[in-house]
Each structure stands twice: as structure tokens, then as C-alpha cells.
Length: 70
Image (cartoon, rainbow, N blue to C red; front, side):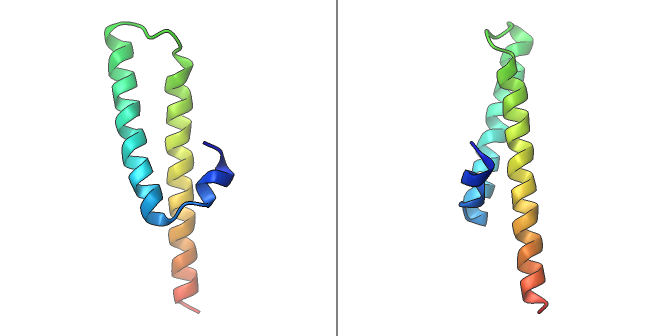
């Protein structure tokens, strides 16, 4: 998922997406520790996606605080 797609989502949608992606990341790590998965780069991609989602959530929260204080 690209950054532009993440920016189009609402804060609630981002939080739901974050929960799903964190769960997927945990499952990938667990599966890889038991038997190596075919493409271990999926773990890195998923970790970076989680970080991008967290960054976008933080930016939206800060934007809401800034608008509220005006």
C-alpha cells in the first residue's frame, strides 16, 4: 500500500488497518521461525508498512490537535 493510499484513509480506518497488519506481521515472523518462508522479504515489507501506517496515524492525530488549538 502506497503512502498516497494511506493518506486517503480516515483515522479509524488506519487504526483498523494497523491492527490487521500487525497481526499479519506476527504470523509471518512466527511462520518463518518454524520453517523458512519462500520470500523472507515479505517480513521486511510488512514491517515497513506497519511503520508507514503508524506514521500516518501520528500525523493525523497531530493535525487534529493543531486544528483544535486554533
